[in-house]
Image (cartoon, rainbow, N blue to C red; front, side, top):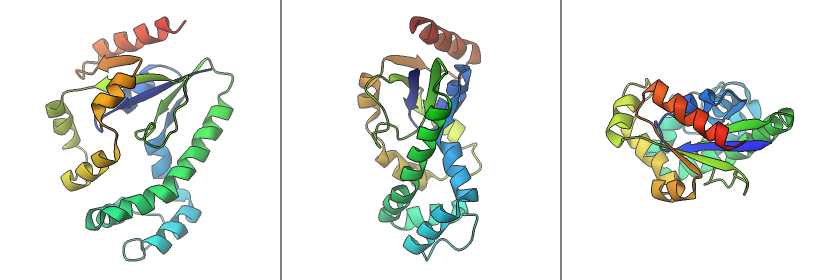
Length: 189
């Protein structure tokens, strides 16, 4: 099985491009959202660590955002609880799809949390900052302060770019990106 890991800046189009590969995708953001909605174990752990911010189940993103913005250590507390759960879900996904030729990993903090393996094919999504900001501002939960704090968790983009096997320059033109994805897949066989 070939593991393609799609990496890049927040808002660069990783999730959209991951789907274009046409293979099973592990989307960590969706897994995290589901944990907040359905996992009582995570809720109780977060409530215990952040009693001033977490009030009810399912966990509200707005409560988490307030916790993160008020104290940078709260983000570390959240990630210590959530990331092990994401790792468990990723392992289940890989086991479930072990007969597939390719799986795609859309995990924003893949390298930071050492979830990548030596043989993973790293695909860096490169996009202009101006375009990313324009797109992020359209999101309903856009928060500039939170975005800056989340970016601080990430390894430098240049480092990720150098470590990558492929770079897709995302100009947010679907045809161009589809061709890039097709070229990558065909080069793997």
